[in-house]
Amino acid sequence: MNAANETAITLIGNVANDPEHRTTGTGATIASFRLACTSRYYDRAQSAWVDKETSFYTVSAFRGLGDHVLRSLHRGDRVVLAGRLQLRKWETGTSSGTAADVEADAIGHDLRWGTSTFEKSAKPAAQAPTSWAVPGEQAEPVPGPPTEASAVVSHVDSVDAVDAPF
Image 1 (cartoon, helix red, strand yellow):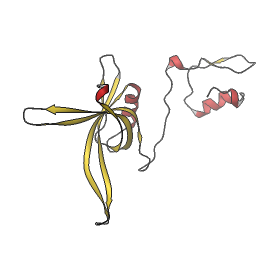
Image 2 (cartoon, rainbow, N blue to C red; image 1 turned 135 degrees about the vertical axis):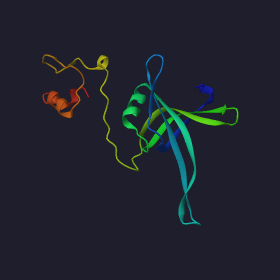
Image 3 (cartoon, one colour; image 1 turned 30 degrees about the vertical axis):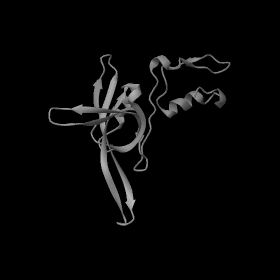
Image 4 (cartoon, rainbow, N blue to C red; image 1 turned 90 degrees about the horizontal axis):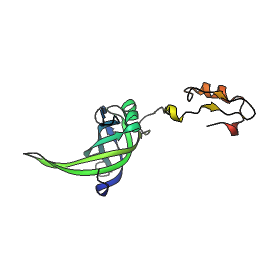
């Protein structure tokens, strides 16, 4: 995207289709989906909520965020999204219009409409700790970050909480 033509944006809406998986030439993940956003207002004269027109955005999420989108989002999910908006004009032989593309920086479920369970991703092996350093004791090798809370507790039982690696 052209940096001069981008605008920071926060959107709240519904995922209109299951995210699609693509990859770049270098193998990086891209998740792409459409986001439908409909504003509402309360009309006192009608004593009812009134929907305005729905706006659709094409959302792209790259690399790790794209991987998480593919695992976490589904058609119909209500989400909050922060990203960068780019408007681009398009034209075919018989019609023309403006497309709204968003490169996502962060996406999460809208908790006003339901609950969500967060699962932290494991760090890549290159960033994993090689041992738990306990002062005065021999370091014990650890194959990678623990994936269960019980695994963390078993390593921390003999460590003072201030010295814990997390």
